[in-house]
Length: 159
Image (cartoon, rainbow, N blue to C red):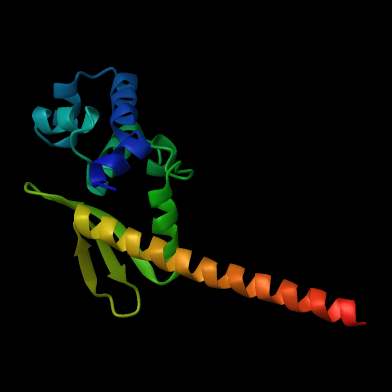
């Protein structure tokens, strides 16, 4: 799953557009309020790029609303945030990163404070490995349950 897909899941472009329209500003005016080029802001609204957290915070500041309320980030409708939640539950912080050349996801190990940058391809590979491991573990669990049931039925018949 790419970062662009993540933006689509959260509908950030549409929410940015709604926020801008609520303020009564044109794209150019709103971009100026945020301190970014109008073309960059336009790419955010059109879903061509994902705005970094700092820009989302600036939008929230301009509109005087909390980020999670403005962008409805408290109830994500996608599997990636579930993966995100899982990473956080095992001790990693997940942060979107963007510079002029690329977008990526940063994973910070809370214990060591080390930062790892994942590209879209690496994130896809990690998610597939986690999915494969989960499928393997579930198959083991199901087999153990089936074995236990077979063993239980045989024991019940003997009594």
